Amino acid sequence: MHELGITQSVVDAVTDRLGPSPVRRVRLEIGRLSGVVPDAVRFCFELVTAGTTLEGAVLEIDEPEGEARCRTCGTAFATSEVLPLCACGSADVEVLGGASLRIREVELVAREGHPGDVRGAEVD
Amino acid sequence: MCATCGCGGDGVRIGEAEHGHGHGHPESVVSDDGRSGDQSHSRRVELEVDLLAGNDALAGRNRRRLDAAGVRALNLMSSPGSGKTTLLERTVRELGAEVPCAVLEGDQETALDTDRIAAAGARAVQINTGAGCHLDAAMVARGLDALDPPPGSLVFVENVGNLVCPALFALGEHARVVIMSVTEGADKPLKYPHMFRTADLVLLTKVDLLPYVEFDVARWVGYAQRARPGVAVLEVSATRGDGLDGWFDWLRGLVTSPVTSPVTGSVTTAGSPPPPPAPG
Ligand SMILES: Nc1nc2c(ncn2[C@@H]2O[C@H](COP(=O)(O)OP(=O)(O)OP(=O)(O)O)[C@@H](O)[C@H]2O)c(=O)[nH]1
Ligand SMILES: [Mg+2]
Ligand SMILES: [Zn+2]
Ligand SMILES: [Zn+2]
Ligand SMILES: [Zn+2]
Image 1: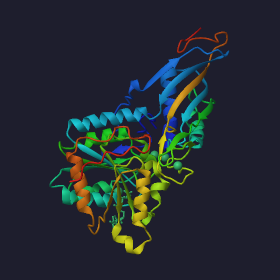
Image 2: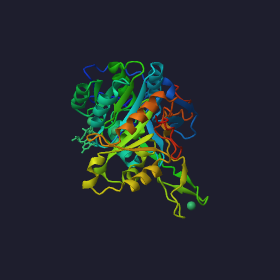
Image 3: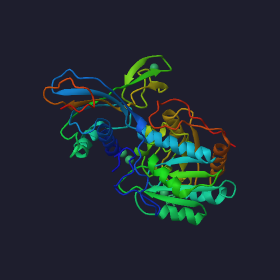
Image 4: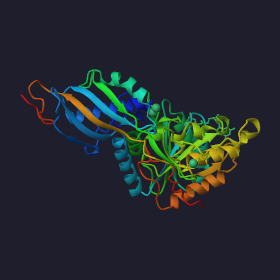
């Protein structure tokens, strides 16, 4: 279950960078070829965020596919598999991308009357 | 658990040593790029943070330290019981006089493997991960502190038996060796592609048992090559001794070759041929 540690690193990164502001939403990117299972991250998220500024936050996960190109017939296609087969039957396929594992965006709860306040600034 | 480094108040223990690395996670791994949100009552912050960057940075630090000491390190990964420690015992006994060997043993619990290596005649330090199912770069940094490998030595890092998790976590190793035994079935490279696709060497062990199990070696080689095109492949028996000369030659090649695989082997794109250490 490396997803537990991965999820914990989401919480650490957000609290390290954004301090005590409550978090409303977190958007992650977990590529289909990253070796990390989004459902396992969702499962861990509730556990790991309890008692932090991320408690109750909505978790959104983008799951980009990889891009495959067959070296035998030249066909390009999207894939969710690490070792895809081309429709032509060839296994000699180059795969690019789809392995990302990162935080994209965080939405913080801003105070009333300061909808556009700047990042990190504590507004009274 | 401390999740940036994964090392954990959840009970990671290194030899007799204390948990003392002070949780100094590198500050530079994240960069935020804020912008003001336009929705009322909330603001959005773009935060491009690579979730493995913390571990990769520590792995890079391990690698620089190993390079400075002229030490080469291998990350040995396999499912539980495939024969890692048996192979290392034999390696320490037969190669140790020529190339100094030291071992970091990763297991959830016990120092049994460390005791076996010590009995075979090499310096060894146990890393117990407790609940953890893989080693990470922070654990290895602490293990190296305790091991203090001599200059010019080979450090074998025996990862926790697991064909899934360890694949994601670079340790600072110069080469990744994936080991599997003939009783596990020839299809494993396709079933666990994350593990095999970053291997520098795939080693099949317990070949002395081939007469008793159904295992098509040629098919297995094909699967390993599909997972990692061009990968070096060896077949050995650590108990009977088959193929060990090839393994020792491969290790000699690693010691003398100019380096080697990238530090962050964790999430690479598949298909780039490995940098095989020139055998012999
Ligand atoms: N027949 C045969 N048995 C072997 C060979 N290598 C290891 N074994 C046996 O396999 C079992 C497991 O060996 P270990 O070396 O402890 O395996 P390991 O991979 O270190 O195990 P963990 O550290 O627990 O994951 C032991 O009973 C060994 O004697 C081999 O080449 N041939
Ligand atoms: Mg062992
Ligand atoms: Zn895992
Ligand atoms: Zn094709
Ligand atoms: Zn793990």
